[in-house]
Amino acid sequence: MPYRAWFQCIAGCDEKYKLNEIIYHCKKCGNLLEVVHDLDQLRKHDAKYWKDLLDARYLRTKWPYGSSVWGKKEFVCPQVKNENVVSLYEGGSNLFWAERLGKELGIENIWIKQCGNSHTGSFKDLGMTVLVSMVKQMISEGKKIPAVACASTGDTSAALAAYCAAAGIPSIVFLPKDKVSLAQLIQPIANGALTLSIDTDFDGCMKLVREVCLKNNIYLANSMNSLRIEGQKTISVEIVQQFDWEVPDVIVVPGGNLGNTSAIGKGFLIMEAMGITNKRPRIVCAQAAKANPLYLSYLTGFKEFKPIKAQKTLASAIQIGDPVSYQKAINILKKFDGIVEQATEDELANAAAQADKTGLFSCPHTGVALAVLKKLLEKKKIKAHEKVVVISTAHGLKFTEFKINYHENKLKEVTPRFANLPVSVPPSYEAVKTAILEKFEGFSL
Ligand SMILES: *Cc1c(COP(=O)(O)O)cnc(C)c1O
Ligand SMILES: [Zn+2]
Image (tube, rainbow, N blue to C red):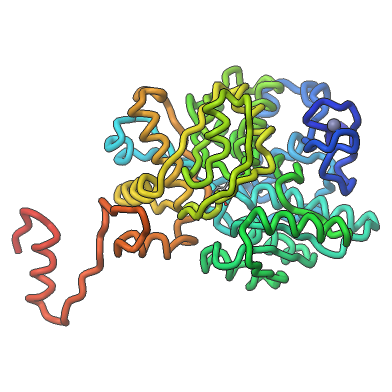
């Protein structure tokens, strides 16, 4: 069956563009594009057909459908030929019940979706597999694309470099100097990307990469490229699939450039259109107080949106003042009874550490989401009986400096309430025994 999708303007201009066209904005009005699917074709099968098909493919090895992104290929990017798919088996990340953390926060049904348990350690893999596959397809059709480039707060560049390396396509990453973690910096270096360290912030890198791509026919991999959103929307489909096709009540996701907030909504909308689901969760976008333009807009009822100058935050991947996808995110939040809330440095760092003490290993952005969940529970905007999924966006091991500095009380504006310092002892039985007795109350040796 010929499943079809195309680019269309988010402002409603009726022109359509092919997915293998090098285009990021509407030619009429300059707005962002989104991928639109031929729903009539998809609806020729009923919900049971789709659920059975997706379940049969999930985490198996039949190329490329074992990837949880490509297992949903018909409504992600049907036009990519299987031989052009560049996949590192993305998705299928664990979704687990955080029982002890829930007890501490006063909510029973809290689940963590570990999108950071992925090839390059963040959810960015989900979108990048789609984008790089389309680039491979365009190159195979004879289009001249010398390289793919992106500006990044660290994780997009890691994903771009890895997928391009897997496909043998040159990549260029624009990173704000000293604003990404060491682990994030080494990833594109290791994967052979041209890694540019630039003395500016993310928004400055973004401006520059746009100019370089435009003038040199280099393909732009930032999330104004809506192919990535199609891959990321499988997060919602996968969550519902993991819950045996039940929709949770609330999804909390940290937001920076705001592509992922819109992607998560888009995943629910397509499931609804295909008859797979019949309810919507509330979507909560969690921002760092130091980079909170969407939160400020939310306070005006989304009547206004003003870019800001983002300030330095521990949640470095969301240190963005001029988010590309703000309009898409606002459209989604309006449809999903959405909430935007913010978290301070102290709140995000302590929320991450508190969660770690119950067995998680949270990145600072997941800390923002957890801190916001905590606040909304206190404000009773999320109810204790509701089923909540927190999107953990990156692996904590990418942010070890953040964690060490937390435990050593070296973070600005943070009072660590869950610090756990290593204890240095001489190699003697007595010293070890003393250390044990000091750590654990009521212990006798
Ligand atoms: C990219 C990223 C985000 C923010 O996602 P947006 O789509 O830019 O809102 C959050 N957390 C991590 C770890 C990221 O890499
Ligand atoms: Zn338009």
